[in-house]
Length: 264
Image (cartoon, one colour):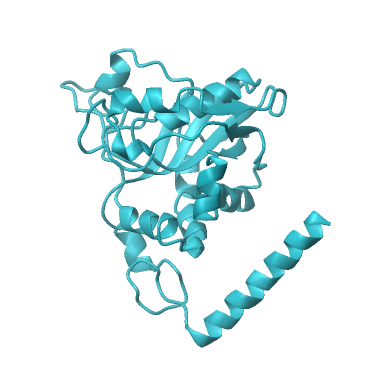
């Protein structure tokens, strides 16, 4: 009965979307230009990459070092100092700045759900690079607390992960980990306090992904505190390994970094 009701709602939404497209021709939801796409090519062309060299562990911009190995294997100062992460490696498909930042804000705060699919498509090329290349992952979106989910109406990480699953054929798991504690918005906290804020905020379902390699999906990461807490919960529940892929990487991810202030 519940599945039938959900199917009816989905069908009604598709019909409504089609009717609205006839009345109001599609336009880019970021710049507003009319066209066939909800994220135009001009906006995508302005997406910025995380500046090389990047930290092999957390994916943050790493300060260049002297010597021939300058753009080869390196860690950022934070990871070099021994910051222990539960995941193997993390990457952001783009830098959290400019048009990328505007697009994410449209998706999350203006509730422009149709941006999720074209944004997720821009993440695909990152999956072909180390450390993700050739791996068989189960895709797991970072969950929202039920109270925030009710307020927003959708989980943006789940929408991104859904498109990635459709495009890659990787399985999608939505019920292996849940957010069991409401937390303060990470954007209001300094780096060192973000880890305390999300400690024990997640709970994995024992055995749900036992022995599996997980690709954790989120929209924005900075300090990676949320991704780390979620990874710990998944490992505790039996997952074999966790990698993290976000649509955008903010700041350098260093504690107290004034630039590292997105929602993460």
